[in-house]
Image (tube, rainbow, N blue to C red; front, side, top):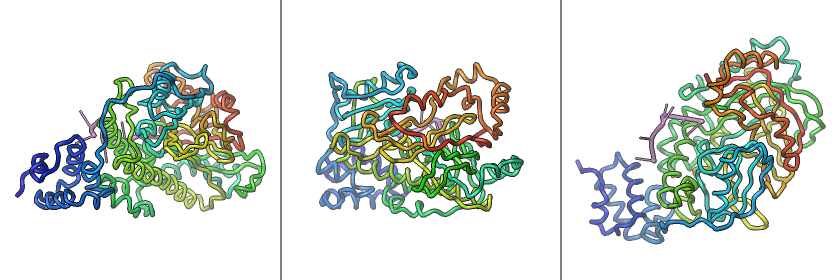
Length: 463
DNA sequence: ATGTCC
């Protein structure tokens, strides 16, 4: 039996002793644990002789890059001036969130930024932050829950369908959704996303595929939910083939579960290792898109985004089937992701971390709280927000403050007053913990127009 | 957000 693969083994083969090679070795040792050392070293020898043939390779690409064009690791300096930015609803946003944006605006890769009216402090970029960069992606400006998104299905049933069916609808939610860190859908679902070649080609994704399969169609915890309610369309929508009126609808909010969390963790680690920054902005470390890791993050991030969509689609499919009806229209959007978009005519990487894409004519959903309406919106394409809007009402009380100041009884009262049935839910998510969504919508009238209103009725959350 | 340490 061969001993554990070490850096010395590669040096003996003739690999140079560099930072890039060390990081690459760490990755290989991690994903080829089951392989014999001799086998790995034989492959490594090939890479050493013909590195160009291994560029972009899942396992050996980083090592090949380390030989041909290693990532330059050097302390990055912040700019003296911030790049342009706009804050929407400045008076409603805490100072820490603003400071975090100001820091991000001084990154040498920054192009333009914005803060949405629901912004609050987070890791790296604040939640509700939008940042355009030049050919670089910041894992912590996408967020830990990569691909977190909204999905709204309008059913072929009137809103009045809910009358007197509280018990039946509650059971459908309990039966066909899965919440919390461990709960999964009872019956397995197949989905094309699991056959995606990226799950095979990237060693990290390969190692996470089994878990992704298990968690498909689950919702997770925190502020995630699946809820029945009525949606009121304010005008005829030929684009959705829907007439003005009220319909039964299902609204869901969730992300990419363990898959996205692991991907975020992995590439944040690599970014911070290879992109040293002043301490207060270290979490804003980026990956150059012309590097192996940058390319790989982009592939992984987009696969994870597709997976998050697949989770919503699975939930909606199950519930439509349980209701015995069909979906007339679906509106959906990611709100934790990065996109390649034109900013003042130049292609940039636009990170939206808790922000709804709002280019002209793009539809999206901005939820309120469990007891207040969510809004179907159409983007106005405002360049000042980098074509974005808020992703919700935003927190008014911290999670700690909720535990201290709120009670389960007070929450139940407010839910009863609003006529909401809640399954699960914690004090963190109490209606009083959130800002007034109507006010937040007012603060972004230049960003989106409202085309419909969703009123929650039966809400399921974790716990 | 996440079996809450790469």
